[in-house]
Each structure stands twice: as structure tokens, then as C-alpha cells.
Length: 69
View 1 (cartoon, rainbow, N blue to C red):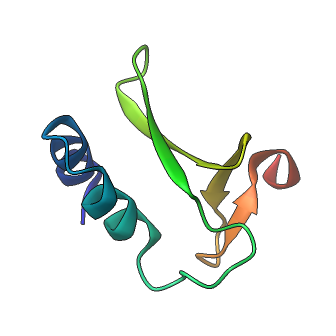
View 2 (cartoon, rainbow, N blue to C red; view 1 turned 180 degrees about the vertical axis):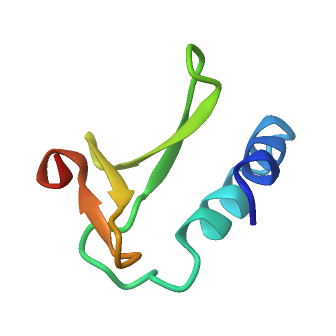
């Protein structure tokens, strides 16, 4: 699913569906996101685990953003 599809789901109020689509196959990871937030400046969805931002690394595993940098 593309980023545009995720944003469309999010804006339509289908938050659980958007989160499930963003997680994909890696739902068992320790850093799997628990919520999505719309970044209004960038117009993109940001994934968070608790209060820490997470993103997928080069291998497709969820990692804390500060560990990727």
C-alpha cells in the first residue's frame, strides 16, 4: 500500500485499517507502531510506539528513529 493510500484511509477516519496497513507483515516486532499521527507540515503520516517515533530500516524492520540516524 502506498503512502497516498494510507493518508486517504487516515483522512477517511479508518485509523485501525491505516495502522494495520502501515504495519504490514512485521506485527510482532518490539518497535511495531501503536499509533499514527498526521504531520501537517509535511503532509505525511508518522508512526509512533508510545511517545517514540519509529520507522522501517533498510531490512524492513521497525526501529526507533534515533537508532537509525
